[in-house]
Image (cartoon, rainbow, N blue to C red; front, side):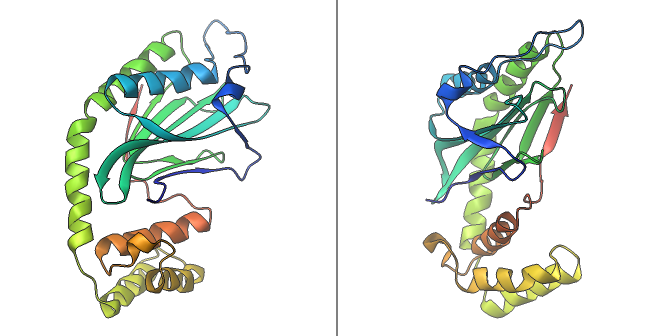
Length: 234
C-alpha cells in the first residue's frame, strides 16, 4: 500500500518524533496572540480521531525556524478502496507566520514552504479562543468523515474500474499540456510513469492509475497536488 500523505521538507525543516515535540515549549502570549505548543495541536488531532474510531498507523513530523513551526502528516488505518487510506495533515506556527491548520482526504500534502492541501481544510488563528475553535473545527470535520468516506470510496472505485487504453492516456497527457496543466519538462516523466508505474498497484490501465501518474510526477518535482479542498477559516 502506498503512503497517501506527503510531508515535504525542502525549506530547512527537520524530521522529529512525537517525543521531541514534548520538550518544545510555546512562547509567552501577548494581549491578542496566544501561541499553542505543537504537541497540544498534534494531540488534539489524535484525540479527536481516536474518539471517532479512527486509528493512526503512521506519523511524519517536522519542525523549522528554530522549532517555532510544526508540520505533520498522519496516515489513518481506514481503507477507502483497495490500496487507498485516509490521511490527515496538521501544522502550527508560534512565530505568527500562519494559523493552526488541519486537513484530511485521500491525498494530503504538507510542506515547510507552507503548501497545505487536501480535500477538506480548516484553519484557526492564534486568538484567545483559537485553541477551542480548532478543537471544535476538527471535531465537526471528523464527525462528517463517515459521509466523506463513503462518497470518496465510491469515487475511487469508479476511477479504478474505468479502463483507459494507452492511446487515450497519451491524448489526456497531451491535452493537459495544451491546457497548461503540466509543463513541457513534465511530459516525458509523466508518460514514463504511466507506461511503467513506480508502484505495482497502478499497473492496471485505469483512470485511477492515470491520476496516480499525475500526482506522483507532481510530488517528485516538489510541487503540491492540485488543491480540490474547501476551506473553513475563522
